[in-house]
Image 1: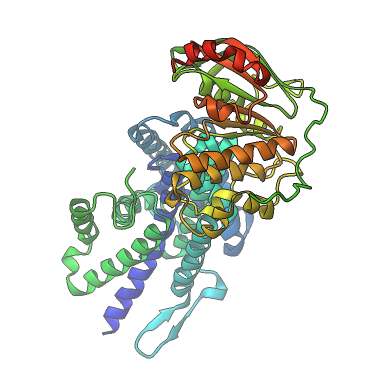
Image 2 (image 1 turned 30 degrees about the vertical axis):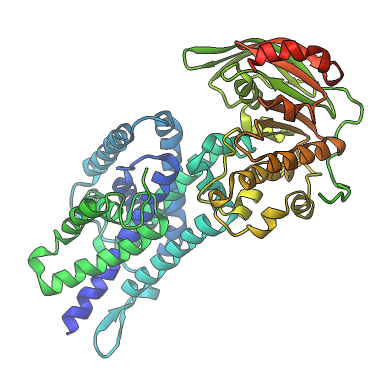
Length: 287
Length: 248
């Protein structure tokens, strides 16, 4: 039974990363209509920025949680201003190819300097150790990742669905020309939205660093699963991304317990089934 | 309709001075040259109507003034400032508000969010109470999805949301299109009331019977040019010409 709980916890942790990353992808797709294949590379950059901050600047994990998303978010905004904005109105394929190219370049540069092996990033002192719950041992850092990710996801959902700024974002997703004609600086809002999506990926990278180590290909390994999550949840759906992210993490964890051979493919099998039954995803809307 | 005073309505020029001056305006959709040198003026506090057949260039004229068309040339002066190279968000912040033909109600927003969406660009916009006084239906539907409203209610919402912003120059593109006569009458009352309060309104209409109830002056647009213009007092004398222009 303990193994089942352990796998559930692993599933929840993976689900946290899936949720944060697919949420960022959903935000970016909703606003920019771009399938951001560079997301995995930006997640990796988040982890590396945390690593650099600690090892070069002596800046702690807690500050990295704030600074890495800002730094990588600014990098993302530069990408948007210098490249992605020129793809507005074009077919999704162009954005996908461009961001795929960006991902390969970023990963290639990091691989060139840091190789493929993982760099250690230790768990902050305050989150070391664990709690014996009786039925399982709960590492504090892992519980922190799940709870913090959930809080960030809900805060992002609230921002987009329940605030004035979110209303601008949703309206601009439907008709950016009219929103701009109301006096809203839509190009600046698009840049900031891309920065927000990228910042979420970088935040996931920082959270992941103590668990998965810091590796140039850490994002490449994850992004394919995250895309499957996004397809299942529905491209552009905020709540759909969050729920599907956590749910698929748990399903993956349960599969590891009940039928380990299928654990790496269960998400993709679900994706195929969803595509056959509801091509727009479980909570998505038609393009 | 209740006649409460719009005490906080923007201080729109009581002077009657020139607010908008359009000279040699040309506009393109991609390779298609739509406007071929439009010239007209709008004075403060006036309701000016652009009349013309479908495809004449009326909507394109409004979109060009608002800066939401791909390419434009010529001169558009708003309060003596040339806005031909100004982006649409800055034009809106100068005090021009646009109500598009398709109404532009956002389906992902409820009525309240749609109503509050356009930012206040300058002080003096109508407070919500006065907007609900003009359009009581909206108050009852605040939590409905914007696109679940009837056509008439959507039109009211599209007009109502720009009254909040403090813009003093309103551009309404075919506000009566597809609406029942009783709703058209209500829109007419609203425009008359806004005019009385000093708003300057540039209206695009195909329904000149409706336009004649609210307009001070008319311009006729054909093939991307202004081909005629007259005041409301001259309307009767120009009726035959107008029938020919509009093909009615």
